[in-house]
Length: 371
Ligand SMILES: NC(=O)c1ccc[n+]([C@@H]2O[C@H](COP(=O)([O-])OP(=O)(O)OC[C@H]3O[C@@H](n4cnc5c(N)ncnc54)[C@H](O)[C@@H]3O)[C@@H](O)[C@H]2O)c1
Image (cartoon, rainbow, N blue to C red; front, side, top):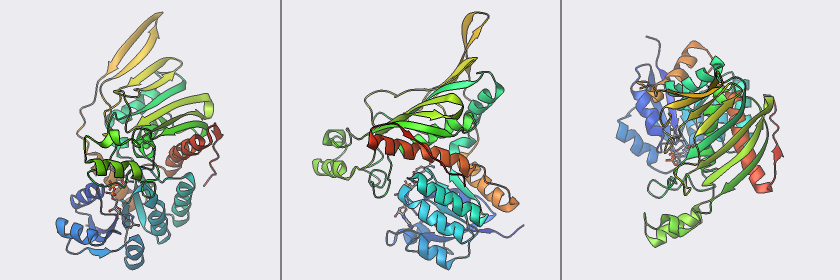
């Protein structure tokens, strides 16, 4: 068997567990280095997983300066996606980075430049791409059954699900997360529909963003003490609900909204509407990498309005095995990563555009330089 690929994990928090468990199930890789900026965290992680051979570092810098690696998993919070990714690529190390790609478009562009200059692989972790139900959406659109797509509504999200309070506050502080629901789960909704229609370029956006519930102690007070609730309202520095009207090339309108908290069961199913038919994709309670139930196709047949269901595919696919597996296979075979960076730049341009437009209070034009 070929030599094992040497892997480093940057950021040993929540999601790194999914990366590590997946690597540990493979016989062709070994985790040789861990880094976390919280003192002792990487060491405790090493001991928990019995990774006796892994060296521990106090940040991505020391890890990248001292190790000869084939790949790293960047599992840091959003504001720390760009720096470790760029440094790793510049050192000739392949990177699988967690979603969202970054906080700003500028960071995403820098990451893409580093990828291009290094000739190495950058893969952004959108594991729902590997779900057969998600792939079915793209197949339906590609089949021509819906005709030419001209309107899309997407988003969804949660009614009362701000990810903070119990496992820390890195998702809600501006200094660590940078974006809230918009980046956290919004990037998935955007990827689902944009990937289905071939990722057309976004041209302009009129965005909105709010955190009116999270800034009120009332939101938190049933889950924690009064003092803790106050602390949450003070720390909350991102969006809980955001969205926008995006104009895509080819005359397509994308109407998008996403929530961590909103007083309604769902802020909307996903609709993909074309000249010959429409598709409804039920939203999930929380982004779990799939769809919320059977999809419906709407058509006009011989003057009659008809509709039919597309059953949920009972998938046995392990999304994490595919996410890490396609990354490792691309490194071994010298082939491009499974999720092209140019696509995720467009995803990030919409997120960045919504943030900027919401602050300005009017529609803005999106400029995405070629890399
Ligand atoms: N793909 C998924 O299903 C999924 C699920 C949850 C989270 N995520 C993404 O994963 C990322 C991390 O989320 P999390 O829940 O693990 O957060 P977390 O806060 O639990 O973990 C992040 C860790 O990174 C460490 N860190 C930050 N900067 C560092 C640096 N420069 N060097 C080394 N360590 C550093 C922090 O100390 C922390 O331990 C987020 O961007 C999030 O959007 C993805």
